[in-house]
Image (cartoon, rainbow, N blue to C red; front, side, top):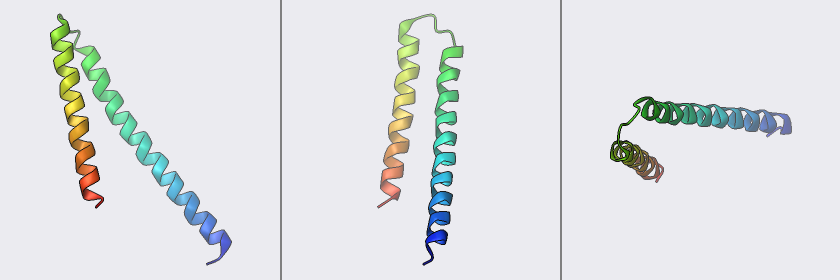
Amino acid sequence: MDEALIRQLKNRVEEELQQREAALLEFWLQEMKNILVKRHHELAGLQSDMKNMVARMETRLRTLKGSSR
């Protein structure tokens, strides 16, 4: 393959990865903001929401790891 084509493909892959990472971070940032907006009256409510978010993230991670095999 031509070196210019290889560089172009590499740049395209890197750009796609950056876009996907940005989208992922935007999603989880919005989820955190949603938790903050709730204005929990008790620590237990905040802990519950945080545990729920952690569980969702762990489930998504397991799904991604499972589908890459």
